[in-house]
Each structure stands twice: as C-alpha cells, then as structure tokens.
Amino acid sequence: MSEPAYIPHFADRLIAAVRAKHTPVLVGLDPRQEGLPPGFVSGQGAHALARAYQSFCCEVIDVVAPLVPAVKPQSAFFEQLGPPGCEALAETIRYAASRGLLVILDGKRNDIGTTAQAYADAYLGPRGQSAWGADALTISPYLGDDSLTPFVRIAQERGAGIFVLVKTSNPGGGRFQDLVIDSLPLYRHVAAFVKGLSDTSVGENGYGIVGAVAGATYPEQLAELRQAMPSTWLLIPGYGAQGGTAKDCAAAFDERGLGAIVNNSRGIIFAHARAPYSERFGPTRWQEAVGAATRDMIAELRAETSAGRLVP
Amino acid sequence: MSEPAYIPHFADRLIAAVRAKHTPVLVGLDPRQEGLPPGFVSGQGAHALARAYQSFCCEVIDVVAPLVPAVKPQSAFFEQLGPPGCEALAETIRYAASRGLLVILDGKRNDIGTTAQAYADAYLGPRGQSAWGADALTISPYLGDDSLTPFVRIAQERGAGIFVLVKTSNPGGGRFQDLVIDSLPLYRHVAAFVKGLSDTSVGENGYGIVGAVAGATYPEQLAELRQAMPSTWLLIPGYGAQGGTAKDCAAAFDERGLGAIVNNSRGIIFAHARAPYSERFGPTRWQEAVGAATRDMIAELRAETSAGRLVP
Image (cartoon, rainbow over all chains, first blue to last red; front, side, top):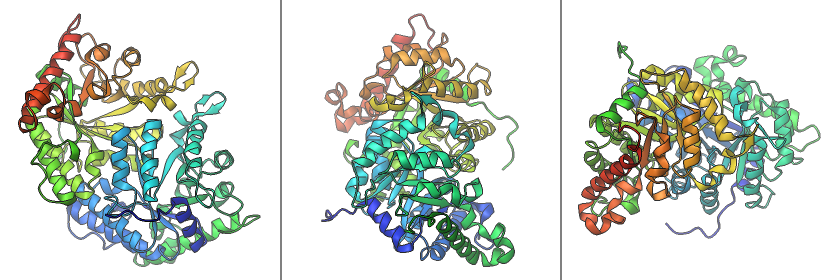
C-alpha cells in the first residue's frame, strides 16, 4: 500500500461530518436477537443470527446515513455470536463507511505495549490499512501510559481517533472513577492525562484526535469535563434508555456547537418497540420508526444547544 | 442444550489441573508474524496469516499440553487479522480444550450491564454454552460494579472464571493504579472489590472464581496482594521477557503451592529465537525449544516455590 500524501485529521473529519449533517447525533448499532423486527432471522444458529445482525444494521445505516455523521457499532453483540458475528461486524463497518458515515467502534479495548499496538493496528484507519477499518475506537484507561500511547501513535498515522473512558454513564461507574485523590476524583486524573494526549494532536478546529467518553447521566461532571479539557472531543453515552436528556448534554458543547457527539442505541434502532413510535409505526414499519426517532433526537438536541449557541 | 446436573467450579478445576501437571506455568499464545518459525506462512494476506497463527498455536499446544495446566491466547493478535484471525482464535481455543488444557482468554474486555453480559456470554463456558468456549477471560475494572457482576454471574452459571486487572506488569501501569486514596493505592481498592467478589464464590479449595491480574514485575505488590486477597487466584504476567523472575513470583503462592499461575508468552513460544535456546535448537527445531523453555520455567518456579512450600 502506498503512503497517502495527506493524512487527514480525525477531529477535523468528525467536525466536517457533524457540520455536514448539522447534528452531533451518533447512532449506536447494538443488535440483539430479542430486539430485531420480525423476519430478520431465517434459520438456526450463529451464522443465521449474524446474517440477521448484518442485514438489520445495514438497513439502519440506510435510514440514518442521510441524517447523522457517524455510527457506533457495539463490538460485544457481534462477538457474542463468535466468528460469524465478527464477519458481520466487519461487513457492517464496511457498509457504514461506504455510505459516508464515520464509524466509531465501541470495543473498549486495552492492553500494553506491542499488544496495544496490535489492537490499534487491527481497528484504526481505513480498510486496507487496518483489518476492520474503523475511524475510531473506544479505549479503557486502567493500564496507564503505555496502554494509551500506542493507540495515539497509530491513530495519528492513519487519520483515526480514540475515545478514552473517563466518566462512564453506568450507576456503578463511580466505584473507582469517583475515588478522590488530592481533592479530585480519579476520572479527573484520567481526564487530565487524556487532555495531555489531545493537546498534542490538535487539528485545524482546536480538537485533538484523543476524545473522552463521559455519560449524559452525569450532567454536572459533563459540564466540568468540557471546561477541564477544551481540546478533547466528548463521546456521550447514556442518552434516552439510560435516562440522559438533551438538556443534560447541553453543557458538553462549545460555543460553536462542537465538541461532543451524543449516542443513542436502543432508543433509535429499536424505536419500533418503544413509545411513542411503537404506536405510530409498529414492527412492520420499523425503518420509519428509526428515522422518526433519529429526527426527534436531532430536534431535541438542537432545541437545547441552539439557545445561545450555534447549531453545528 | 440440557442443563448440566453439576456445575464445576472454575478455581477447583484450575487447582486440579495445576496439581495434575505439578506446575502453575501458563503458556501465553501471542502469535506474531515476525516471530513465527520459517515455513508457517504460505500465501499472502490475512487468511494465510490466520492459518499460520492457528497451525503454529496448535503445534505449540501439542508440545505444552503434557506439561502445563493452561494456555492464555492473546486476543489482540488474532483480532489484528480481522475476521479470519477471529476464526483462527476460535479454532485455537477449541484445539487447546480438546487437548485437555484450560483456556484463559486474554481479551481485557469490559463494558456495562447487558453489554458486559454479551461479552460474558460470548466467551465464558464450554463451546455450545458460549460461542468461543474459554474457561476464563481477563477483565478491565475501570467501569466498576455493574461492569463486573454480569461476568461473575455468567461465569458462576457456566463453571468459568474471570481475572480482573489489578496491578499490571507494565511500566506505565502506575499512572492511575498507584494513585493513593485514603492511604491505599487505587489497585488496592480494586483488589478489595475483587476480593469481595471472590469471597462470595469460593469453591472446595478456598479460592473463588474471580481472580486478579498482578505483574511479576512488581514483586512487593504481588506479595502484598497475596496477603490482602487470600481467596483470590492471581494471574501473573511479566515473567521472562518483561523482567519478572521465579523469585519475584514466590510470594504469590500459598503454603500449598497454590493461588497463582505464572504466564510466559514470547519466552516460551518464540524460544527458538532467544538465548539459550536459539543456539541449542534454532528455528528448524523450534518445537524442542518450546518444550525446553517450558520445562526450564517449570523447574525455575519449582526451585523458588518449593523452599518451605509444597509443590502443587
């Protein structure tokens, strides 16, 4: 493979995508057998289910590609099916990229030294440069410096990005993340280290290629992190099903309406089974439910973030 | 699938395996293209390399199966090859199990709630019950309570185990793990939580199904953890290539010679390229190098741990 003359910058690509769609909504692809609309699974076993996951995700992608800048496949649900699921994940990533979407793979990978390098090489960068072809990957920080720097280096070489877990959306996340060291909780120490990494990789728009995961379920901490790490793009889970609202996310954006993407998985992809969409559409018109739920979330976020702020 | 009448206990199975082989040596399966003996790769691309990884790992398994209780495939190197690598990983796990080895998959997975459940369902328990069929999986703790309990529950249901990262072997691990809260470093807080989980899952031999990862490169902390978490089995990386010695590991064992398994990856599987084995065997007799390196490590550990302690 020949070296590209210009290596695009992940945050600048993300910003261009957010601006093109005028929204920071990120659609989470979390396929689950029990959530699939009828008719997707034909046959028994992992291969049949993997085919169903792939078809379902590709149809979701068809609906959301004109509406949002990026999708976030959740690796766990594909891995749950074994190797056929991994194949379905690869095809889902490939299809999303072909439809012009950025792909943030939610794998929460982490390891050290050359093993971290292997994960980074596996996932970061376009297909051909990497086996899986994701634009970014979520990373867990517990292993420290030499678990993060290999990801940053390879991301930089390939125009890709990473999002490091900082303050997660789950109720039990505080167990370790909220332990206080020198009057700051652990997640702020992780944030400070992540900030250092993003500061060294800032693109044309002031954001680095190293982002942070911070949950919508902790809005005060989200606001605090926006202030503490101005060069760090935030990936916000916890919207919708987990209880986070558009209001909760508002403080995560900068004055340009940039700096954060807000994920919704179940609330969008399985909207046909949830109020108010289940009544309006039902399982047979599930694609329309996906579209309506996406547009509603776009509008909700816009209403909250446009007060005193620019829509991206 | 019919419910088994008796659900075996992971720690008791591990202890039986350690006793049967009279050693706690764990062989790490970390295939890397540049380390393979000549003749393994025929053809180009990910499929050819995945076949090479699988053949190589299966030959390593043939050599070590009579000698050691367990192997630890490193998922990253397989994932690096994309879906063909995932297939090779599944086949490697299947083959190791068929040769009577316990398989501890080093995937350092972590997520929350039902996503953590999906990872647990993917990897824990025999093939048929899980897609991948590992006996245990390594887990990262940053996400807290509801990221660990789903793994524990599914492990318990399936006679499997988990090993949670506590004090890792890498130089940068201290960045967060050594931060001090209430006069104890973070890793001790993680250890206390892990201890709670292992205490609730103790088998016939006093060990729980929740183990801890603690590096041979930090021998004092290893000794401290052995004392602090008596029901928790330790998985010790960092032996050999990373600088840890048999002496460094000695304090990790209880008075029965149990309580820890010590991993060596490169030092065993690529022994043919390392002194003193490279001179004695060279690349064409690489299997003999693997056997000699394994036997030497068994002897080194036995020499250190049998002083005042029983050999398992």
